[in-house]
Image (cartoon, rainbow, N blue to C red; front, top):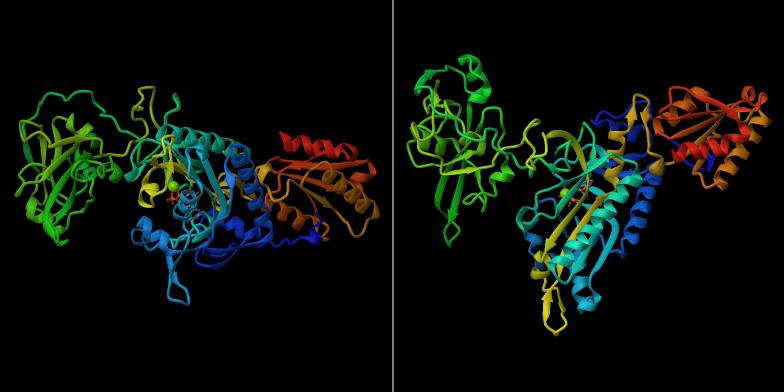
Length: 581
Ligand SMILES: Nc1ncnc2c1ncn2[C@@H]1O[C@H](COP(=O)(O)OP(=O)(O)O)[C@@H](O)[C@H]1O
Ligand SMILES: [Mg+2]
């Protein structure tokens, strides 16, 4: 490919709304162009990357036995009403009407449509297992579209759906996808981790997110460097930090802490370590009667150590909180604790409150907590002696770096990641709602067991750049670079020798299967080099009159500090070797 037949368009400055590096660099490199909030044109340079990402996904999905089809972007609402998601899906689901006033949606995923296909087409156990996938435009009306393609409203996803006769077989299909995902992300050349993730209402333990490691990632990944434990922060189990509760050694004392409403401030004032304090969080649950009115409200006090944070996902799995909870209102708090937030604690409650202690808190002795009186805390608090044992002891906190790994194999570390893929065992959630059955050997209808498997195609571009860039621009892994190599001739239109050598090298590289671009735009060397460093092409070959006099060209990898000289005749092999490395 020659630049004159392509479209190169770079910017010196990124637009002001581009907050993160990948968004800035994609805009500057001419890969995307904003059309509306979270909606982008994929420009020729960006589309080349998307196509390479898709090709790798397609190859590995096909290799894993999945079958490609293509389901519509605009889908009739009926199927979504059947599954209940037409109502249940929040405002992220874009709903609309056609000229006949019929409801439609733009697909955020395709469980309903694929389940409809499966219930019509997969009638016998002999046709299972089956995995259908497509690579298709998605729309989610995200509350905060941001970071360019990373959280778009319109984006491209590969979504696959497996259908099996029973759970065992479904978990095998899940494993096949898990392994295929590893091959896909290996081939992208990205650093990633597969982490265990929360399964929400579905339950079970078959959900993994594929996370590209990047400091700017939105997700916290917990892992153990000395074992293969890896989970996202929502799921990672936090163990009690002391095996047993110590004996009480202090008397209970009400201590003035004027104006100190955070654990850190109280600890500093009292001269005690933060780990001696306990933080109080107040939740509420509502029970509704048949008419849908609130019949009863229960107030909950959740206690975590002063340096720890509540994990709301874990809290939401507790008996009594499972059906949904909210944070208590100020008036509910005053009513039950006789005090405003800031000085709350488990001693001296005005009305009954369900007390849940984190595992670590349950083992604390002589701790500090709010006294349910403005400007006062209790010190020397001891379970059993000063207050009843908690109603419930549970893991309700986020792990922190240095916690013991739940597998007992070392200490946990935390790094940040960007979720680029998700594999999920669905069970019969959709097949049940939509009556997707097959006939077993005895001719009896059985519900199909399902799994769903997504990869954020366009998000991969952002994630790859967050992980691979420097001050000059993007550094693409060779497998997904818009071009694997660029030839930069100096004086292409002035020197017949340079032009001939550049054309020949271009043709030879192309013949050798290298995705090469010859920059024949006639730019000055500085501007030309800056463009390709910004765009992030992995290998550059510079051809100049001066070099050719000695039969030499210059080769520079995008991460190399400087170029190396080599004979023109060796350039093809050298470029290939660089790309293979
Ligand atoms: N708004 C978005 N913009 C770009 N990619 C997205 C967006 N939402 C989801 N994706 C990608 O699609 C994949 C599958 O989506 P899913 O797991 O259903 O999303 P979520 O985790 O947001 O519920 C995600 O792993 C992510 O890579
Ligand atoms: Mg997900």
